[in-house]
Length: 102
Image 1: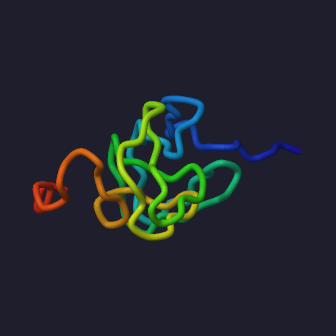
Image 2 (image 1 turned 180 degrees about the vertical axis):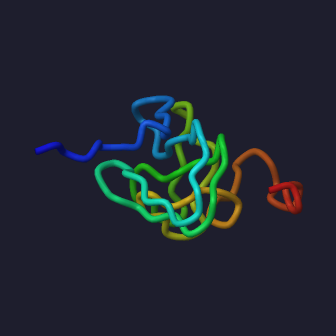
């Protein structure tokens, strides 16, 4: 009997302490992907370079990428959730400067 992978090989962990994976390929709308041992169905397509939560992140907690905080969660983020402007506030770039550039 084969076991499902802990995480899809398209998910790249840049540093062991990161709270997000980075997509190294596209995920199609409706596709189910293994994320940290959990099967997650993605309602929308996601492209190369997008972030997917590796762990649960509470509002106000830092989001870690490259081993460093890149911003803070603005709402609860579950493992497998897409992490982007809708649930992340950058610690470096004001959100209004990013509007319309997603």
